[in-house]
Image (cartoon, rainbow over all chains, first blue to last red; front, side):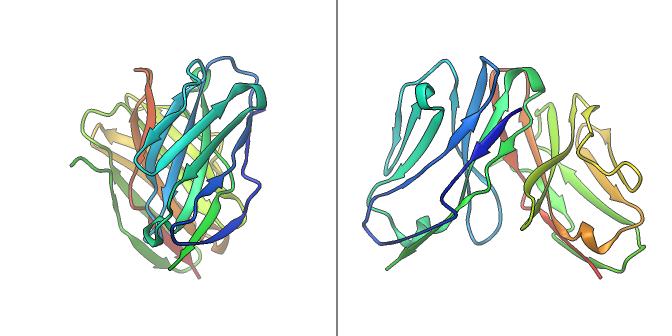
Length: 115
Length: 115
């Protein structure tokens, strides 16, 4: 079975702090994809990043960075110098190449960045 | 800027009434997904289509829910009869399944309240 676990339900930080959101996944498939989505207070789900199971290279995009480690089945997301606009619920998700692309979501981590 | 659109954005209805939600996927996308978000269950897949053909609707209560794609620009999700436990936010997402680009782009959602 496939599963995504985001153990942190809520995180609160002060602006300019760095914060890491954890994501652990389970799958028996050898080819799969991992994603992060952001859900701001407005409610829409915004795609942030996708990683393929065969590509463990970490990625940085501005203040955002992602650390993918197959050995620990983790795909963690770090925000550097957090800002109030980063306040949102962040979802980690998994899809399998063999299962049509449907997303299995974690329960989400609610990030609150205070000024 | 191509986006998935959903109508209505909000719907309040009484138990037993029929509800129809509509989704216009991003032009050129071949895969359409319906997800439901609740506090208790989080984000869960209801059904999805590839090239307008239903691939999986195992997440849907079959006795009251139905999903269709009358054409490539319209997907519908219907609940008949609706029940209070159907109250949730229903998201439509579209993507380019089977092309090596598995990320899905979400619409703004339909917030359904059944009284």
